[in-house]
Image 1 (spheres, rainbow, N blue to C red):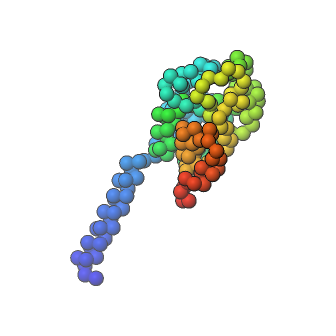
Image 2: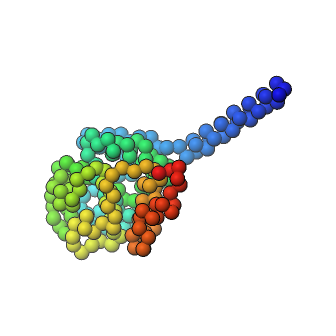
Image 3: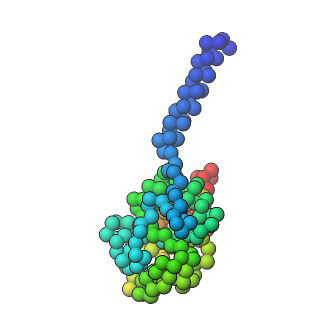
Length: 199
């Protein structure tokens, strides 16, 4: 191989890498969110509310979004992983910002929460009422404001645990598509749509 030919191929490879890097930068991950005084991550897509479930769902509906309750706790390594590696994904970040009304709850917090049936308890007691024992836990609320019951009873989907980007992206998409109203189980939806290299 001549020197000119080698130089050309080397330059072509470098250009290819540069193009790939530029493509990646165009869909770059968002920065990790800061920690609040309570030790929980505070991304820009969290909505500060008075934690009245009926009012929050009404506000979400008015904004054309789906309400999502995200339960976390200080020192939760799985919560940290989700914020550091999953929620920063460009498409996941976009959905959480544009399509969801996300309310954060602290598993052991003491902020008052009012349930759909009017019951008012501190966060830690409300989490016990909802049966939440693990973080992170995601509770997806219905589109219509329920007449009564708890948030857990009215949730269209409850997902405890941490997942990789592909599964998380599909979970958010499945709820937006109202997959819970159909016959296809979420696991089958994931198996049908998830790229084998992105789980």
